[in-house]
Amino acid sequence: MMETKLSFISKRAREDKRMKFNNLMHLINASNLQECFAGLQKDKAPGVDNMSLEDYGKNLQENVEGLVHRMKHMSYRPQPVRRTYIPKSKGKLRPLGIPTIEDKLVQKAFARILESIWEEDFVSISFGFRPGLGCQKALARLDSVLMSQPIGHGYVIDADIEGYFDNVEHHKLVDCLRKRISDKTFLRYIVRMLRSGIIEDRNYYATEKGTPQGGCVSPILANIYLHYLLDIWFLQELRPNLGSCGRVEIIRYCDDFVLCVEKYGEAEEILLKLEQRLEKGKLKLSKEKTTIVKFERPKKQNTDKGPKGGKPETFNFLGFTHYWEESQRRKGFYKVGRRTECKRLNKAVCKVKDWLRKNRNRIPLKDIWKRISQKLTGHYSYYGVSGNFNKIKQFRYLVKRLLFKWLNRRSQRKSFNWQQFSLYEQRFPLPKPRIYQKLYQRSENLATLRLSK
Image: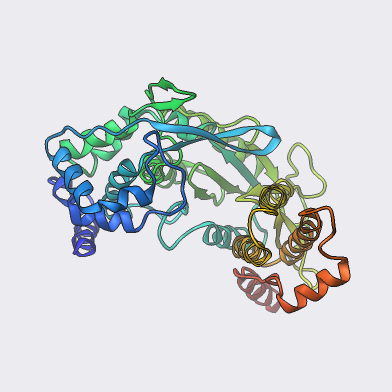
């Protein structure tokens, strides 16, 4: 029933791009919230109330009916999120907010409604946190853009918004929502979610801006904000008014994006305009992560080398290092290669190491083997793209060595020698590396077309 109503909203949003939706709160009912509960992930950390998903589900019907009653009478107020941190590169930490189960239900219900409206407005340059899209589709689009012209694109602006989720202005975000929603109660509850506050080390901190990472509604709100601030501006204002500039393309995955430009002077001009545009949204680019990279195909005679010249540089995007490599099938033809970014590979290996160290004595060998197999498959499904086979093969080798090392540290006596370990693996084989996303087919077709001319 709920899917039918959301489909109707999507249809209306698609047919009338100026339509504003009112009376959305009637969709927040007990049936909808129960559907949302079924979609919540298990084994996740509880919020500030310490209530687990299992405990909330014991009296699910009573709990959701009470929640709906409070929402109708405007007495529901989201509780503060519990602040925790996850490690990043270079020893840095990423803040993560963990809502309560009840708040997750409400956020998920609101997110479904927002998604049904704005998915009809989002443009093709945005790939992050959208149904049917994702990192692999963004990589395929980037490969297509870089390979779409015989000369290729000369420069890539590798951009990153500094502290994006922590710096979104609430009133500007609500202004974006008002472009499609006129339900004041619906908008009021979103403001309450944004301003629910943070609990860290038993201290309360107000949230005057930002959308804490970890909430179910944060990704769609972040996309809506950048849709108007960046995507529409790029398509309707920046690109049409560049004058003599050549072709410019953008691929965005939430707050990480790259722009492909033909000449260095154009890249500098676009980067300046981009900084000015983000300032209007009270955002700024990260000076450490935002660079202009010379990425001209080696085959081309270079007449506009920029400040560095020489060999083409590389850039990182979505966990991959992108570079030019010569095709093995078409000698003299260069294609875009990609490999797992070094820090991402090291981070993935360290995660497996920490898990094995903590769990080697807690669970049986067969369960350890099963979990490691799942971790390998998950790594392959993301990093298994064309040209990256050696890196995912290297990851499997490193994990295999870690598995041998930590299984032998479960007691004072060794569990295996290497020969015994190899025999056990032959009987219960670990998943082998596999390419899930093929990106080179289009590149090879372009090569055939050009060589035939």
